[in-house]
Image: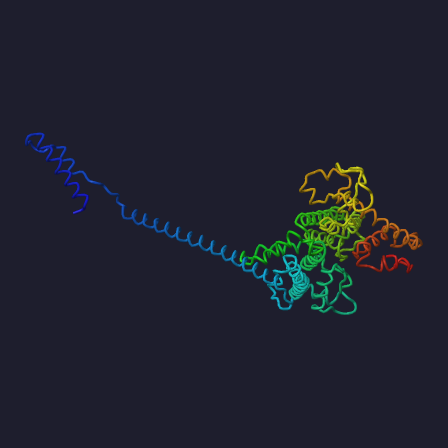
Length: 486
């Protein structure tokens, strides 16, 4: 019998006893009969509910066990890291107390003794050559794979030059090296013109141009940041080294910038490229030089020419046949091509050199409350030195420095423009005077083409308005002195 039924029977017997005493032996009350027949009702799926309840309890127990194990593992890992740090500190103390020869130190001991800056230099010594060689080799194989898969590229290498075919392997590695080093030299006489409708070699060459010049600092910082994120916490010393490279890049490498200057450099790179691309598409769509080229190829050609004209000097189209407005945009872009990297380099300088504009004396009378009675000579002169506002100080200290007329970036841009353009004007004047006869005669040589050639040479670009038909412009110069000045 079910236990509930036994208990229910006992209750009914007690109720019957009470009724007998109160009613003097009368028959059982009908209510007593109703109580006797009343029991606890269970749901039809009571067994299923019990199984689900047991399953939930088991899941909760397993979750608590797993959480306890994770907590213990984390505590154990932290304890091990703390113990390793103490052991390393004790080891360094013993080395400092009892100096030994450097050759007797292990690599890890030298790393710990040298500090984060020493380890950061060691990382860069290995990372930079790997970056250089790796990118050149990978992209060279990319060119070779494209040539092997494209009958059109194979035909270009066979027929483009009059002196014979070009070896595909030699072309691939030569193109990769030339583009990465921003040389603009090709084994094909017509430069990149035969690949106007072939996006693969244009994109590969364009990426090499950027990775080897303007975007080098951007890509290098991205690689270091990726290495830092992928390094596990157990490698504390390696993470500390990478963090040092990210926090203090200019202490170990000239062309590795902090995050602010890197973002600024990336923004300027995108803006200049988009301006050149817009001028190429908007000002030349109706000209015969783009006739017969699909719009998709025009976009890739314009993007390639925007990057190449500012850095390397490759030509995917005859620059002399473009709209003069586009040529003017290219001239300005070539002139300012070095400024984004140069300004980022000077702005991120961490050393207190007055030659780079970090410190200056109060020349404008704005001494910010400093004592003006300090002598102008002797050791007291150091007290008159004044911190020059940089981009970092502006971001951290508010807008005060931006209101001053000698804000660092503006000052550097003005100084670069004023100094550089004077040399350029002198060279232009000399060449125009030397080639005056050719300019006045009906010939491709004009003042405009000379300006283009001089700006291209001044920016180490190598672009020519006659490219790829160089015999039409540059080869018609008559004076050796003009080539010497160029």
